[in-house]
Length: 200
Figure 1 (cartoon, helix red, strand yellow):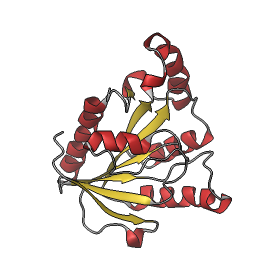
Figure 2 (cartoon, rainbow, N blue to C red):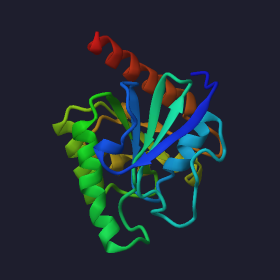
Figure 3 (tube, rainbow, N blue to C red):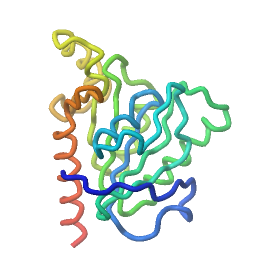
Figure 4 (tube, helix red, strand yellow):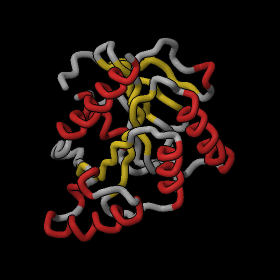
């Protein structure tokens, strides 16, 4: 994927505030400290497009970004042990569930897992939603640079087991080395192409 232009469109909470039009969308989801912002910035070659923070949970809205004027990347709110008020945490489920259920131009969800963490209840809940709604899932294991290569297999195994997804479905990613960037784009492009064919 050659990214020529990327621009922030808007933030939203409810469907009536989502961007208009039928441009295909690919959403990014994961725990609040899993590295979503860093992944999106690496994918589009824009260091500051999506704000990163040392404080988990800063992304509390649905954020829409146009890529090449052809499709949209959507940064979904993180979940888990973020340092945010309880009321905000409770909004996550309905906000994300409503988006997944109502967004007809959603082509896939890139679901992020931290290489150092075993998936928890919220991860499984989101996986169940995606399966229930028949939304294609692109699983990515982030922070590959945090673990030595000879320890990776041992770290990946419990993630594969807990998720119930096949091992070859996962892509390892590092924001530092950009390992996995091209493979993730290939999977996104395949999802966009499949969605376009299905819409014809």
